[in-house]
Amino acid sequence: MHLVVAITGSSGVIYGVRLLEVCKELKIETDLIISEAAESLLGLELGKRAEALQKLATRNYSPDDLTAPLASGSYRVDGMVIIPCSMKTLGAIASGVTADLITRAADVTLKQNRPLVLVPRETPLDLIHLENMVKLKRAGAIILPAMPALYHKPKEITDLIDFIVGRVLEMFGVEHELYQRWKGRGR
Image (tube, rainbow, N blue to C red; front, side, top):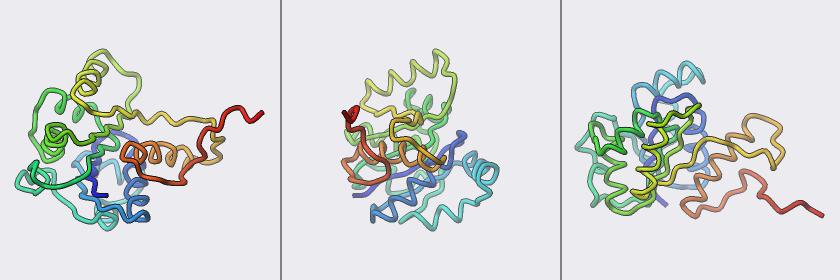
């Protein structure tokens, strides 16, 4: 398994960090792109620097590097995840604007009919956000908002984070034990 992972400037960078940790544990190859805004949030929310995340990835690319291999459809990957996905990035992808490597790689992922998983973490959503999500869903993207369930009886914040990371991995058919699946009412 080989995924492109992008972390953009939306609150909730912990989701992207945890995905990288789990991918490393599961030996999933990752190409990482961190936006400038995400770098700021890493410090603000987690007290981390981009270098700490880059150590978790197989390869790292600058968001300005439009000559990177993942800017081409001939570069083989199994899909892409943008986690968290800012509304700026989501809107750019929905509009076909490929001004940086994140939006270009997402565009390539869609045109190659590979899974593109977008994890927005914005609330409330306005009509423009919703229309952009519908547009991307129609184009083949998977919209997976950071909306953790509670049926698995989370005890810590990490349980909520792992639920979303697990759901992302499931979009690529990856088996995991990050949360207990729903088994019915247990009569």
